[in-house]
Length: 155
Image (cartoon, rainbow, N blue to C red):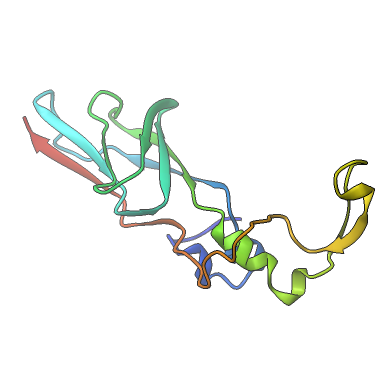
């Protein structure tokens, strides 16, 4: 799936996105902003992320951000000209659990437990997830919402 702009996953009409739980990778090539010198600290500000993000710039893994401010220093990795940014965003599984409760997924697949676990019973289900409690009733925000910005600060 290609997004033309940063969107909140649960606002998408496609069920596979709206109820998605897992990791999505955002990627973009951008030009280094003018005015960056050796006495400049450069940060990548992700704006808002739901829930965690791993950042790579020009192939180098810069680590994970998991709380506000969703910002990571990129001073040593940003280069003049083109830069390749990749951001892996992971959300929580609650949205998949909510999607599994919806009618379109009911009885969508057949599951057969191994012998010994529930006695080898086979049954129809739509579930990909399972919980022993009800979980949330409303979808949780998901995705990279931004705005994503390059911030330069004099040292």
